[in-house]
Amino acid sequence: MKFKYSLLRTLVVLLALNATAQKIFDTHIHGTADPIQQLQTLALAGVYEVALSTSWDAQTLYKDTNGIKVLQGLMLACPNGKVPYSNQYCFADQGDFPDVTWVEQLIKEHKIHFIGEVLSQYYGISSSDERLIPYYALAEKYGIPVGIHSGLAGPDHGAPNFKVSLGTPLLLEDMLQRFPKLKVWIMHAGAPFLEDTLAILKYYPNVYLDISAVNNPYIFPKADFQAIIKRFIDGGFEDRIMFGSDNGPINLAIENVEQIDFISSLQKEKIFYRNAEVFFSRENK
Ligand SMILES: [Zn+2]
Image 1 (cartoon, protein in one colour):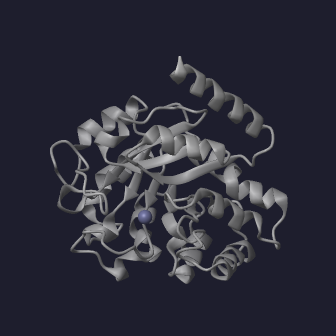
Image 2 (cartoon, helix red, strand yellow; image 1 turned 120 degrees about the horizontal axis):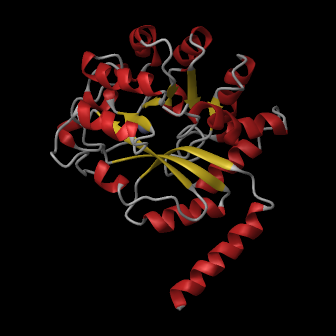
Image 3 (tube, helix red, strand yellow; image 1 turned 135 degrees about the vertical axis):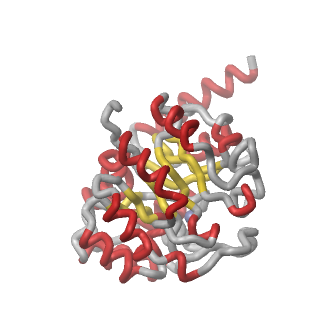
């Protein structure tokens, strides 16, 4: 009974909030030890859909709940078989890369909704490395997106081959030319390699970005975040910026976007969810 009551209370709170809260599509979250609590916190902040990157074991613990739709991502390549920071194995066989036939089957069954977070920088290879090509080919074939970690990293990630220079979005160019229909997003906006992100966006219309980490005031000062958004808006890319939290403080990340005074409320809506709706839509294949 107690359980039922708390569920009911959550539902009532959510219904009340839904009427007022900003709708948020969070394109960048990772697993936690308590998925229910995590999704409840996100729902209270206005999140209705998430793209989840985590170990395959942890993916099985997540279901659509609290009014949140969960898109499930396939993380690879895994340094020593593991997800950076969390130390969990990516796959049951503890391999660095999953079996391609298994991946295709799960995509067909709509159990994998995107490839990501691609960990090439942590693994010590280019985002266009030959070992990633079979997965990109499947993503293009079935019309699902690929999200690629770019930029820098936090401390203690446990990936011995990590290289700063592998974080530039320019390394995407070979795979973008090989798969011209592939939908790709540059995670963390490629910061601090913003010139490179802008160059890729300008030339390749299928490329989007997420603003996770850059919208976290504990990582990037507010002024830096606003300057980064300004670069993308001035560059004409308001239709390709997507919200992401990377498990950072969700309310501060949202507030950061809300406080930008040089963009309209429609532009904010595009960042919060409209662009992600377009980007993650999948033709029924
Ligand atoms: Zn990342």
